[in-house]
Amino acid sequence: MASTEGKNGLTQKLANFYASLEYENLPPQVVDRAKYFCLDYLAVAIRGSKTPSSAAMQRAVKALSHNGDSVIMGTSLHAAPEYAALANGAPAHSLEMDDVNNDSSLHPGVAAFPAAFACGDIVRSHHRAPVHGRQLITAITAGYDLMIRLGWALDPRKHYARGFHPTGTCGTFGAAVTSAKLLGLDATQTTWALGISGSQAAGSLEFLAQGAWTKRMHPGWAAHGGLVAATLAKEGFVGPTTIFEGRDGFLHGYSDDADTSKLTEGLGDMFFINKVSIKPHACCRYKQGPIDCILEIVREHGLKPQEVEKTTVGVLQAGFNVIAVPEEQKRNPQNVVDAQFSMPFGAAVAIIHGRASLEEYTEDALGQPEVQDLMSRVRCVQDPALEVNYPSQWPAWVQVETRDGRRLRAEVTYPKGDPENALSWDELKDKFRDLTRLVIPHGRQEDIIKTVESLEGLEDVRALARMTSV
Image (tube, helix red, strand yellow):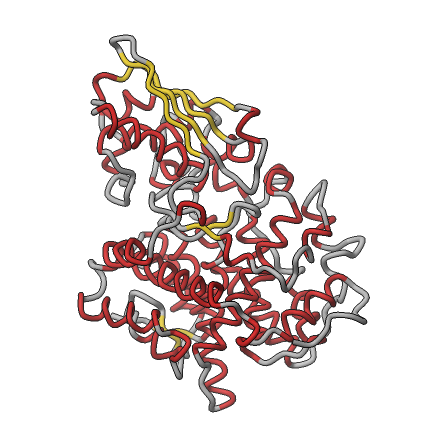
């Protein structure tokens, strides 16, 4: 790998590193994780294509893109690559079951993979050469790594406090470096692509006020924007070379207390793709740990909904405004988006059904008297003890007080799906089959699984994308 020495600026140093990264530099564990998260991305993209917000996105893309043969996953539709990136990123985020990193509090796969698959079509069309599976793995590793480093450097709490959604903001840069790798950009062009991305990085948290669909759009727009940025840079469009460290750059503009040292800490010695989690529950990441605790209490004590007097949930400070307050609003979700970000709703359905899957996060469940009663009995609190190792750890605790006077408590340090408590490959395959069974036939499901498992040997990544079409 080429040295990063001699590149004075922080942005330039990062661009030089990622532009020089080769498949042969990747440890076996990194290659395995890239394939692992590819299967998870395909699961949420295929199933997510059937949500109402995705249908609206697909209609919009059809109106905007009249030509192109890039697959819109889970459908029979096609679009120009840059619009397919948009249409494949948004649905994958709509289920709230996509991968997530704790350090940065963002979802890397739904920004990086849509851009990568779109690049497969661009490269084939313009260069008459396919994107190989090894190239995809390398580009994804780079995209995940930069995206997560940015979120970590910003400090998720500070970024959230300014009203930004890190998946949308940092995702644009992750998609840009992913695209830059696949489009063959050199270090200078990659620096420009990152600089251009800085003028496109967006993502407002205001969706929380009304349960709007805009959060679901953020990774798709990031994939779209990053791909456009890399394409512009490839054609010689000049972007600022100090977008991260500059006076008016990303870190200064999007956080009150950014730590630039985190952007290069351990660069090349470790890859953040190894620190990404899989979601087993269909809701915000800040609810995953508390739901694990509730499910443990339900299983161990045979808890019945009618026995519950009160449920108290310890919630991380960074997630408190996302899932716990305004209290009255969180206890009265008006739509599925509200429910995905309501800790009271998550607690109620977990107690009633012993799970918190897509089947529980429905419009019908919102008005059920049993759900409404249990939501009114949920109280969320902040606990300084939970913050000690945040953001590397996202612990939680739950205490249920029963009507016969018992106090049932459970705690979790690493929620199910974290690298320290990971889903096995077999569990991930089950998640893929469960999410996609209503969209694609069983035989195709197994073909996709086998293709992903041997992704490093795939001659043309477009073959995998086409397997997701219906």
